[in-house]
Image 1 (cartoon, helix red, strand yellow):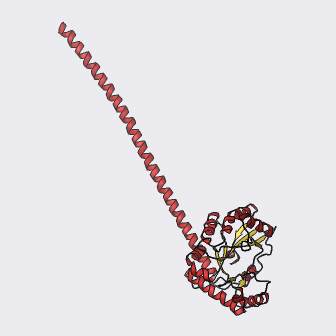
Image 2: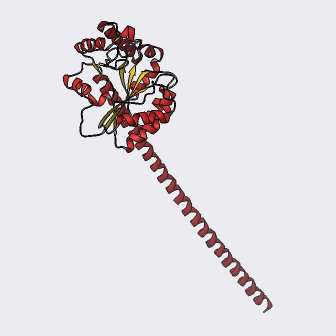
Image 3: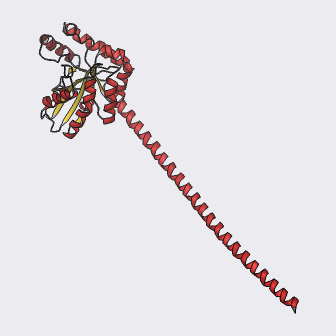
Length: 304
């Protein structure tokens, strides 16, 4: 009888142990299942993330490819525009640039560069603001700073001609002398760009195309230039950065005073090495013009 009771107690303990072990096994299996489910979920999330990253990378590469194609197309268009004579319509648009078009537009123009000190700063700012300008190049500076001139072209700015010496007594000694300075500077621009087909077809007379001691010589030079397919461009607004202004605020006020309420504004500025105030004023000027509703253009916008 005692043995029977003992056996029953032992069986109950075994059953209890088995139940406990089963419970533990179920618990461990449940935990393992949860962990396995979490692992699988993490793996799926990792795969989905990887897929998304691959899609993003693919989109970025495609966007970059399209941007490169667009950039190259724009460069090719600029090369085409400056590798042929100006049409009569294009000459007319430049020579009559100031007439009202029914929209507010502004042309930022810089004379006497490129310089090592000021021009790169101006280019950095123009790039940041996504504004294109027109640079009237001095031939001797083109020879000294070809890399900066090339950057101007590559970043979509128009390269025009301002003569070689900027010495009035030389450049205006005869129409032929003016035309020679134009030609020598054109060659310096071609060499800097590495493009012997480049022709700006656009000249800015040092001191302006009218008035002064050399007015008669300028008028004769205009005729000779035009006969050779070259037009000229002055300005109708200026900062007076070459006339002794001492602060960027003075430069800004000069622009405001001379632009008035004009629809089309061609602003004269300079990017020679001593015109750091022009750079310091330029950001304020661009923001002011944007607030006034002006559209920024350069000479490429006047060409077909």
